[in-house]
Length: 276
Image (cartoon, rainbow, N blue to C red):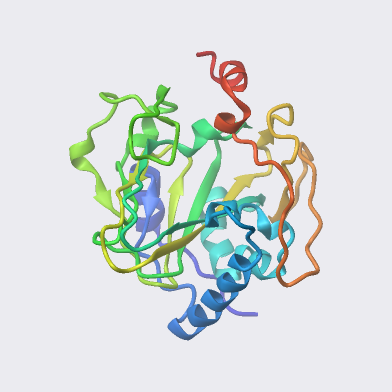
């Protein structure tokens, strides 16, 4: 069995204080990323007319190709170093910015979107392409996770693909830093970290797979998202709060279900969970 990939004390400390990491050794080689990008093309072939890559969400439930990426041992070693020994996988989706696509992702916190309690989750962002300042790399506000959940407002007059964004004035935008990655590298960010991304005016695609993990004591409000499923990654699920998924058999497969975050479930769900 290969030796575990441990985070250094400095990396663990920086994640605690800044809310993100992006200085980790590559998880996949360039040659392996060629294969993974071929797999991505197979998934894109399963999209129907009018659908975009944003539809490839939670397809780890139906595609062994994606499930195996989410359960990669090196990634799980890093996650264990931050969440502890007992945690599960529950979410995945692609964020693909095609060349010359000027759509943005407004400032937000993942935790605001997720009907999860307590807020003890994180996201691993795997670069399928080099993610650069030129092609719209994610930007983060270091340390913003320490403020807890911030007020979000509904917007419809920006170029953002999101409808719920952090209300301005709650954090300093001038301290934002880009999270640049080479293909095969990952970044990790805490669920309350304020982040977003600009458009991609460059001639180069920027594709990344986000994978979501939570401690086993984290419970989903199934009245908001009844489709929520977990896959134990490490340790033991002593709480058993959430439905468990079945490991997929097919190499590539669509997931036919309605996605439901707080935003997608509507204003009533937002009021119920956030008391806004």
